[in-house]
Length: 283
Image (cartoon, rainbow, N blue to C red):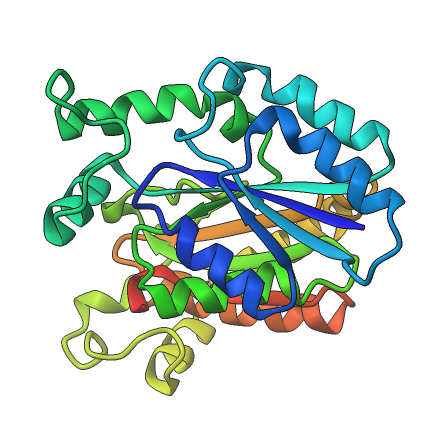
């Protein structure tokens, strides 16, 4: 049996992600009391039924006395031989604040004694033990509901048992992605942004491809990243790593990083490492 534990701060997209998993055939339970998780796993494992994939949503609405015990409870589930993964969704504080302000929803922790901003901050503290145990961190800052559904489908539901590898481009001026496991910096390469004729294009388009492919350092950087990843990815996978997010950044996330992600993904695919692609500043 496959058990996914889905968590994250309110407003990060947990409901959308859980609905996406349900559409993909997962038996979904939202806001299960954390202490009942081992019992649920036992019952699903021992009884004869057709349920093979289960997703459980756990958030700050849970019994708060149990949240700090998450690691111990998770260990009890894994001791039963259940294939278990933890996915944690989050977004920057200001993004969550804006989402609640836009929808006028009430935060589950806010009341007369706690403002919305304080509730969002406090929720992160309550869920710290779950975030620390996460196999996959998903930064939903730039994701609308449709994009989040596609990401969950791509990274979680379509896994073939191997480590899920995602290459993503980003712009350093927007900050390093919170979900990145490894980060490469491409800002030493010549920047097409400074050529007015190239500025409107992105790294997937031929004028940028032609420009960067003529730069000797582009090929050297690609060679170095490919060799490093091909050497170390098998080690990560052998250490029971389920997900790996490799982020490549340039200044704006439009040209160099996009070009490198596209090229590196093609190289890794040829080497037997299917890589998914995401361009944060182009979404």
